[in-house]
Length: 317
Image (cartoon, rainbow, N blue to C red; front, side, top):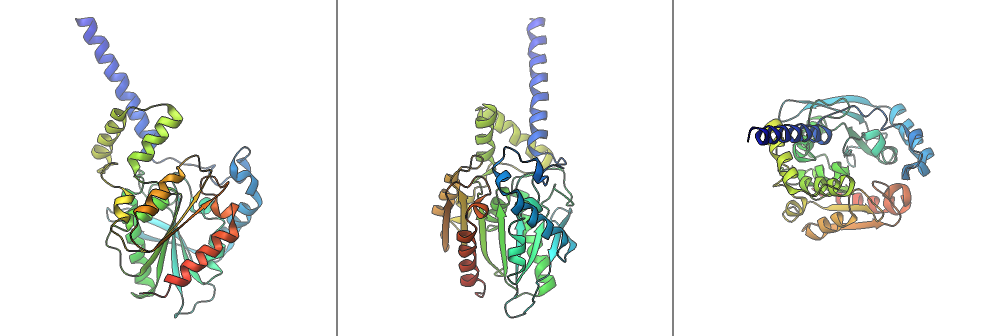
């Protein structure tokens, strides 16, 4: 009996250590110094677009901008690069707030977009999401707490430009889910529209899918244990929030993009989000585009869709 209890205790101890390791791997902040290293993409989809990405990153660094900050609802300092409109016109000036993906950076995820927005009359706010870059935070919450940060950034823009200034959200991957979840956070009417590129439907679903696909772990028990750890350590749950349910209540116009060849977030997730949305909406599925690559593969199609979206909703209060 003693031997059995010893081995049972050892098994529980080892399992607990494994779960702590998994929790740290999935949720805890770490430095990703190679994310912006374009030259390291040798066998990656992005390798084909190195020149485009490098030009975009060069613009992000060299264009006139300043680092700004605001405070999150839970007391964290959130940081972002702010690019003032090149040709300010108070009648047409708009701001777009960009939210990058999981363990990524704004300069990587939006290096193809910042110059386009900036030179077409937008103030651009390129956010470091909590627990990334210069923003404070120890845990990544897959868009849950990040969606409240989106509200903080809107308030920052309204304080700076007034209560009637038009604001758009744009997010990629986890950033897309962040801005879709933000639609449930009592956003002001200034938020005229949302652009969601390859977003997932819920933290629990994407974590379960990646665990099964990449690590051959299909146990719902493990996801439930991770959720308990999230509650105990971070004060959030990966269950109970779903972008389909949120968009089924939100009337904010939304434009979806997703690469048909996305091997990380299934294209079907954007299709489901689009189907659930009750507001004005449009979706573009881009053939041959992998995760976050729609603009790279079909820049004219994506630019045209964005232009139409902004013209349609930019002046509506």
